[in-house]
Length: 287
Image (cartoon, rainbow, N blue to C red):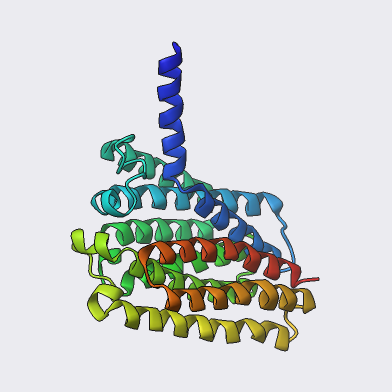
């Protein structure tokens, strides 16, 4: 294999890796593990690891199929994405996503029957989201938020303690709902070009961002409840107030000062990274 061929191979392998959006995959896997941990056990550990891997593969498949259906929009909004940049063909991207979904579902079956059901449901909903739901007003946002919250529930299922995973699942639902609306406000130009009817397009950017603001204000109040009820300890409260909620407040102020796509894109990334602080808060809340 000559140097040029090796370079081309590495470029394509890197493109397939980036197609999965590895940061999103990592967040999904960590969320599932945390979902198990906060129930008070990670036993049987093999089930937790299998569930985390299953969720990671499903998330990777979802990200790949999303790029498949969003290729025309991405050529306007995100021309560097692997399929939009024509490094990977649409056919390759579609087949790759099906392989990833299949591995995720099979791994779910190895956990238990309920995990298998959730894995199948999640895979089907994520495909439907990319193919249809994301082009509808609010339903796409609700679908993504539901799927992300299911990551915590998936962790609870892995250790047969579903009920105790509901708190982070609820937080995750509202956090992602607000962020998804902000992302839609960022992508207005490309969505119009692709004939996608999102909340900001249907009702205007300001009204959409007002809804996102209301969701986040409600969530900030909601995050105090587990500490007030002695479910989580002082370390949870410190991280939530000093980092998680502080970052959300900063993002809201910045969003209203500057509603340009560049700033909304920056804030979307900041909010994504802030999820790790939220996971750390929940993890530390048990101590």
